[in-house]
Length: 81
Image (cartoon, rainbow, N blue to C red; front, side, top):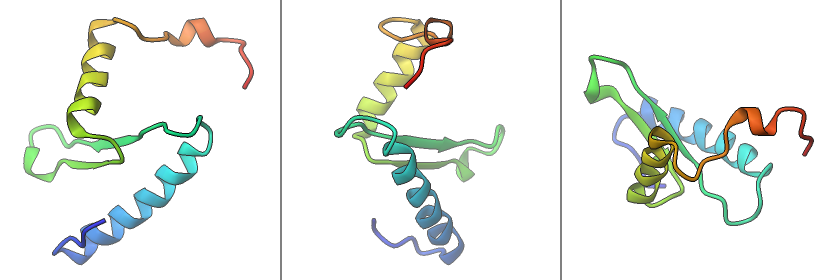
């Protein structure tokens, strides 16, 4: 990861990256992860950290919004890992 010029942002990015790695351990190898933190009304402070190509992450969000090819939570209820 390239260093961010703001040390506080860099620190947050490193800590979030550690959590992203921990989360990915629950998924099959090759899975990608994207973290988006938004502050409504303040688009200049949006935080995005991803191991994916951003267009692919956007496509996943679009699929979720449109309901195509997604697994709904109620389908997984009662399922075990």
